[in-house]
Length: 318
Image (cartoon, rainbow, N blue to C red; front, side):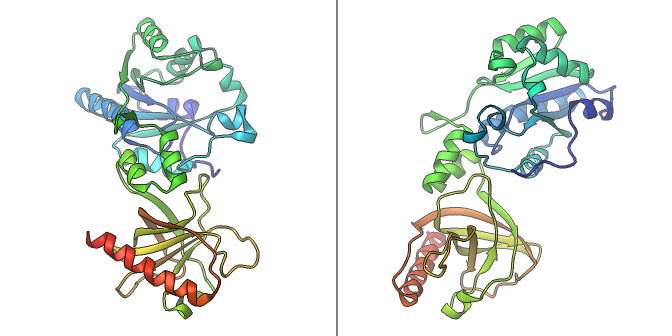
């Protein structure tokens, strides 16, 4: 898991934030920054703006499961840096990334909010989802947060869970959707398209010899989506308008004798592609078309890629 960079911990943030302005703090792991998370953060931002205060997010790294279940830890939808960028894009003034260490995990639930207040004396209000848990043994819940907030003179706001198709939106539900290729469901819960970011690397130009040149991104996320072929959009600095494309994410079993690292290969549809080696790209995943498979011959692979391109074009024309 890549580490978040250049975002202060509680101790550093307490010294850096302006003491004269009341702080409205949203607290949570916020993996994926989905619609439920956005509801919590929007409440903090709106309240802060109304009173001339600051809005901030307190989140944690790594995921607590990395400490308690290192052999079966939760695989994350976003790395720390991408999550922080997504949080800042929601209008908060600061993202505070608290290291989730054994010492931090041992803080009693009753001491959690006093410790936060001790580092952030300008704290005025706390915002969390209704299922937020905290403190040693995850004993703390919203009821305890309200009780401790009242004792400290803090307002505490609990945001109800946001639902989709009759079920609450959650990071674990999004992970399950990505694992099965259910991109419509994952993107609906995220409130945006799931995206990969990477730099185009040199390739063997096999796609070009097949008639389908690709942009190769050696992208290895913590949580790998289902291997297969997708309809995607690709964007980069060379074009303000995203391009429709078809992408394969996986191990390329037809052309690889060994088992390489997964590769994201993107073929831009029907237009001159302005991107090349060294370009930083964002790939938005829109529709799962088929699982990755091994073909008996290169000719079979070429014919299937042509069908994949047609399927992606049909998706974009719908």
